[in-house]
Amino acid sequence: MAVLICIVSCSPKPYAATDKSYRKQAKAYAKTILLTDSVTLTDSAGTSIPSQWVGTTNFGLRKPNYVVIHYTNQKTSDETLRTFTLPRTQVSAHYVIDKNGKIYHMLNDYLRAWHAGSGKWGNNTDVNSSSIGIELDNYGDGPFAQAQISSLLALLAKLKKAYGIPKANFVGHSDIAPSRKQDPGVFFPWKTLSQKGFGLWYDDVLTPCPDDMDIIMALRIVGYDTGDLKSAIVAFKRHFIQTNIDPQFSGPEMDVLYNLYQKY
Image (cartoon, rainbow, N blue to C red):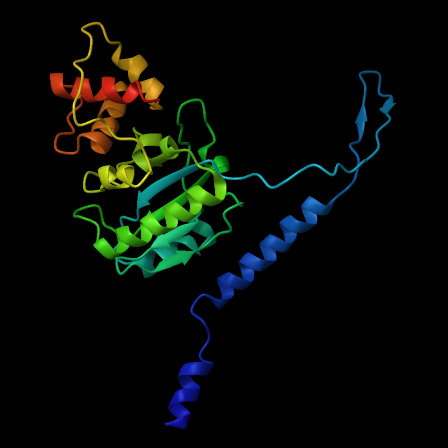
């Protein structure tokens, strides 16, 4: 029995190597931050421009202002953890939440994960630099586990309080990349999240939209990139309609869009 206990307790952590790599990279960034060399510049005539480093006392870390929610589209959270710890994949997230509710914290909230790609939301064309990425262990073909959503809500509450993230700034991957992505998909409970303070939702009683409402303008005001209009409509409907995601609006769906764009 004693031998068995030693085997279990002495076995290496499955991600010991990547944890070590993380610490090494973090130390390298810390060295960069500590550099105090003044800029070296010359003017158009080749004359050196005088410069001197004077450290300010007024600064802080960049803080996240958005949360982007994804599904993993992989079979298990272990598969996702492996994907996010292989350098060749070039993808990552701050958090991964297992179906059983366990949360894996993979990157300091102040650092830039590679989860959003070339996503765009409103005028923000570098979503990675201003957001936290959360991956939910889900293949995209069915509802999310209750334990998983409970953990997500607890995590979102912590992030919202810590960084002052506005309610409207909790979005999905397909919202910021409508022509490329579908996650977190039509099974994701956006209405439940909105009721808890994360993301906007439309009112139960809707005012009919005006006949001359500009659909493109309304989608842009909400935040969608309308460069591919059909994809933007589908992404909007995937988030807010969910029962029908064809690339055109019915009358009631137009009312939903009208109600939402007035909230932004």
